Image (cartoon, rainbow, N blue to C red; front, side, top):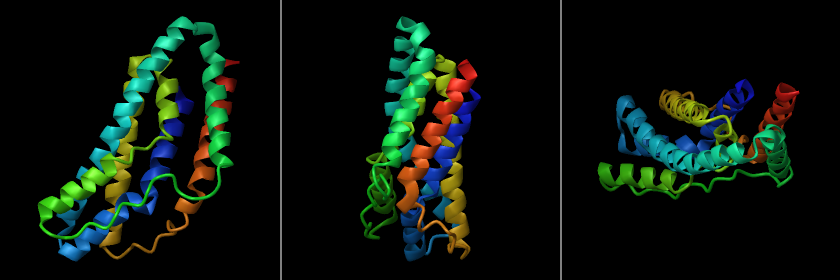
Length: 203
């Protein structure tokens, strides 16, 4: 269980740090000359939309994992780590580049439209890489699934709001521009490591 929690935290942090998750909100905040509190609030709304669509898919997969583990109790102990490793290797060798589309530029015509535009864009681009963890967590029961979802929510929103806050204060020259280029490799590495750790836990 610890390896799943650690992997979820690392993957949530990694994806939240990718500029296309928070830079559009920062750009709009600067264009509209919003105060810091409002910029962070809008980021939280957009981030929450992103998290809700991700968790919605994860809930379905987690419940599927729970049902499958009940039927194949003995096999679940080694199927879940193998699945993580296989998907991790697939991500790592699928080439460079980020896996989420860059949000289209939002025209700044009315604050309400801007917020809805950002939220809709983030909602329609759920994080698919984390779903493997939700599926695996489902094999451990609903409590573990809920715990992972809560961790994903808190980590993602906190990271996005923190980065917008830093960018708002002029500390936006962080070494994150190249992160999207290596996202698949980093995501794959996290998935493989959690899968390997899962094998050691069950041995």
